Length: 342
Image (cartoon, rainbow, N blue to C red; front, side, top):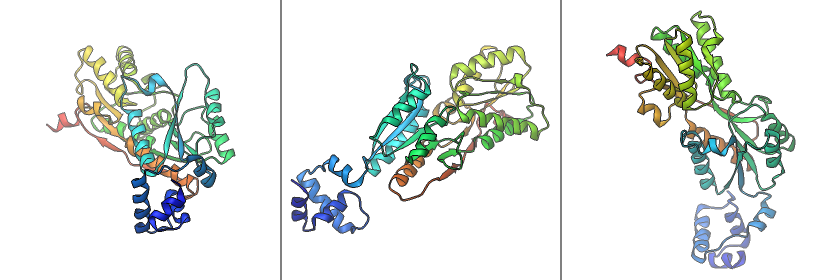
């Protein structure tokens, strides 16, 4: 069964069948449905090699996750990457594309990882999950080769040339810390996530801006750098509580925030009376712990980034395109607001 056979059965030309298979917009919906019905009836599967030669596209996108496999499929953090991959998958299925996932390896350098990706010729474009220090090695070559790509996060370099989808981490963090100030807190510590991630830098900047707005001097001793995980929150909170008189913590993620809650409760402190906490993400675990947090639309970021990438691949838009998604402060019990209202 070939295109000519499909055309005869559908009562259309061979070129019309070809346009339907290739998703050409210049075909009426009635004709498209008629051709697709024949294709489904006979079980026709287009030759992928012929399609690639004809369209110059593989209909495969790369998903670059610059983190080791143990982080991506971590039992302690089943939320972030799951939401990202789910969002990308929703779009690729709808648009008829496949995913090729690239995950970092602890045994190789960032440069080796990125070189492996650049040598691959099976992808039409890339979604780069997270903006991290060192990614300029990949971004520079992608720009040079005019390879379509979209970054999930604010680019560290080449910002005016790169397409990306993100949230305003600076403004969101500032809102979180100002909310703690509004609850009467003044000795507010901050626990960051992975320091090679630009989101961590931006959230620290938002923390600093909030301090300046209330004329509070920045104290680097009240900032602890860690990872976006529960253990970081627990260990950092124990350190801060042992060495400093703090009354609140802005946690760089929900998992960090949960670790802070556990450390505080272990020391007999009441959250939020003795220690108030605001975090970032609004994963399902935040509601479980009544954690006040900044909600960011993680799945939506992935959906919008993948949609933009495929539009770039199909020449429906021209780069660079940037999109900022809205965040929301979700007030629960750990900040003290609800307790005060009661």
